[in-house]
Image 1 (tube, rainbow, N blue to C red):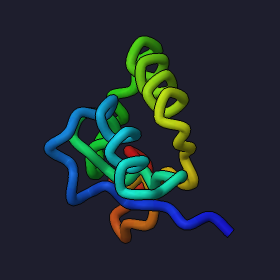
Image 2 (cartoon, rainbow, N blue to C red):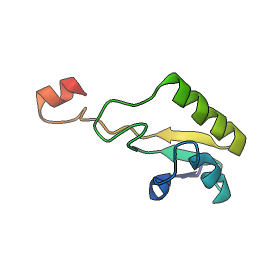
Image 3 (tube, rainbow, N blue to C red):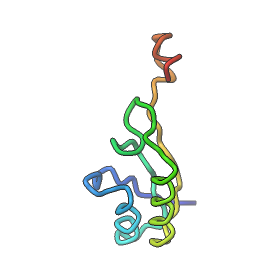
Length: 86
């Protein structure tokens, strides 16, 4: 079983600073929830190869892994246009 930290309460930190904070708090796993600079609520991801590379390095340096990724899109909306856009 993996016990992961959802670092939402530390969203003031950059994406690259999160893994060290997670490790500092005693966790080995992170649950990556929506954040404006990566996977914003109900919007397309802002994930680019350089950003992924720097985040992966920060994870590796802190010895922290991603347990879950929580995207929030309107896949289950009762509005057909929203579902299609998601």
